Image 1 (cartoon, rainbow, N blue to C red):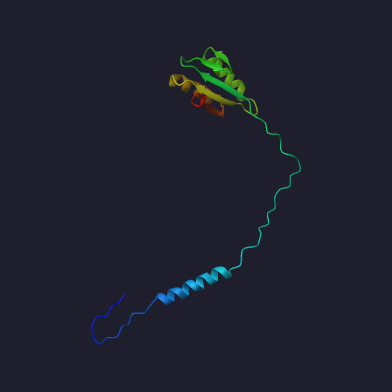
Image 2: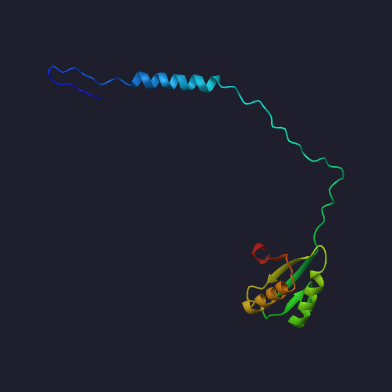
Length: 139
């Protein structure tokens, strides 16, 4: 904004840009309204389904629990030592599809025992291992 105080004899050379901005906004709104709505479709060649998909099969689950004293329980059966556990892992690793291992360590179990069980599973190429803890969800 320019303000002239007194009569200095100079002419004011500032242009008023407000009408130019108004005209620009009217043209922009007119352009947006006049644009056609996109009505074209994209053609996709999807593969034809000749046979139905296989039924949803639930994988076999192995419940592996580690007690606070280091005892390992395989589907409710106590395991005597880690060599027996390695044999179980080796037997299960050759199955197709490979069963899932749901590992439930007690919160007071030593990390060393849990690490040894996980290492045994890894040595025998078990791929589907998950930690499960249902004690948090009990009332």
